[in-house]
Amino acid sequence: MKLSDIEMLRYSSPSLYFAAESNCITIHMKRKDNTLTKVEFQVMSILWDINHSACAWDILERYEEPKPAYTTIATYLKVLYEKGYVDYFKNKGEGKTHMYVAKVTRAEYTRMTMQEVKKSFFAGSIKSMFSYFVKEEQLSVQEIKEILNLIEKED
Image 1: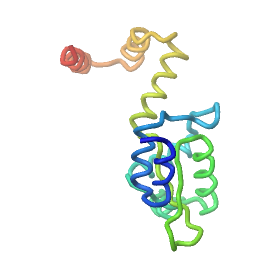
Image 2 (image 1 turned 135 degrees about the vertical axis):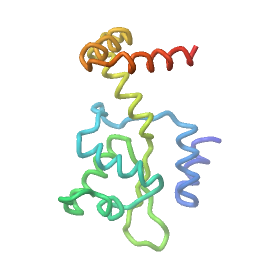
Image 3 (image 1 turned 180 degrees about the vertical axis):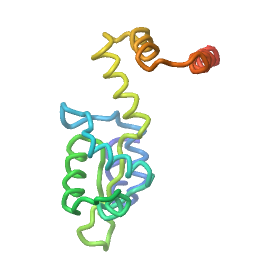
Image 4 (image 1 turned 90 degrees about the vertical axis):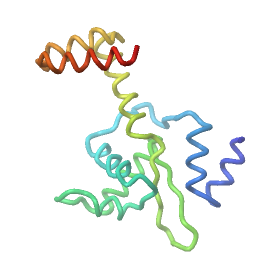
């Protein structure tokens, strides 16, 4: 499937478009600062939990009290679009309502974030990162055994 074929799906079948786009195009962040702020992460978490396209009202409805203003959610969605985390489309016959969909899964974001933490704080060393958590989190013997079992299962 070529990019032009994918673009034609954008308006005729938005759900197919986003599935095709995520399979054919690597994630491209539009800004250099691709980390999420706490509030941006909250908005993304709601969108991830919804697990399909949603408008700003859908997100606001699921927001915890005290709820921000609708315009605040709309602004965050615009920022998330600019950062490359979401895309949007309009359903035919629904006026100006933008429907947003996550372009990055929670797992992909977690992976990117953890890779950045490993690179920035532990010079890219998983061993250093792991030893830090063992020491700082004061893992119990049982927790360490569980981790070792996970490692053994991967072999």
